[in-house]
Length: 281
Image 1 (cartoon, helix red, strand yellow):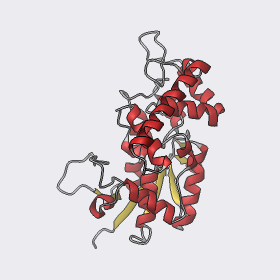
Image 2 (cartoon, rainbow, N blue to C red):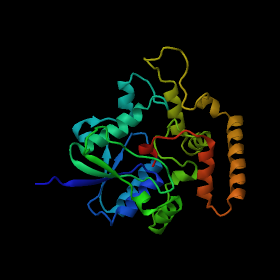
Image 3 (cartoon, helix red, strand yellow):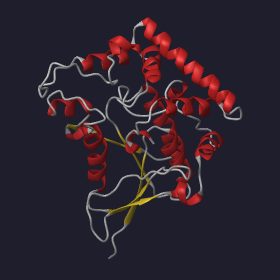
Image 4 (tube, one colour):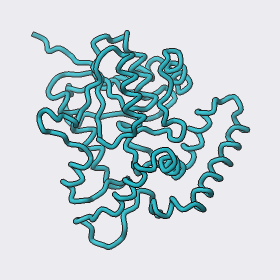
């Protein structure tokens, strides 16, 4: 008997993967939806996933948070395993242990099509199976690329189906942990203003003793600047002023773009570091 092929789609809490889930709902009724929960997501992300779950009409499987089998392996679990070594753009153990491995365990040895939300206007690749063989058990599919779906189409899909964008898009355009090291400075200011309690928790992580450290140099989520320094009133004012200036310039340069698109473009211009695709789509 031929092995059944599973159809799976991972949600990050971001606009692209959410739009793909909406787009594929009726095209592939047997689709399985999953979310790799780090235990450190924004409240807006969980709220948005609940909204998507209601629209999709089936549960979104939450990986890493299996309390019934006592296998809750969230961020703090792995931080303890790594003896206080916090992840960074150079050491991305969070992506490996909280996203990729749980996904591979979820699929197991089954054959599966993995639907990835890379748009037609992007030049990126998604998850690549680690096994090199003539027939890897996980095969990627890119419906947006195949159908010519662009960023503008993603906004349209979400709006027309009554889903909209996550509320965090008011101040941040990437999903993922609230302390993600790929956050821009203006997004850290947004976290401070919208969720001061989470900002303080992120700041506390910077002071977590690293038993692997070979120097006394303090870890900072932002390169070259601690959250204590970033949260000073004069520094916040400076960051806000820079963002407002960039927004005004972008609005003048591209007057036909909606506000959220202008905001996204401005934040994308702030840095050229590419975040982990599996976390932020």
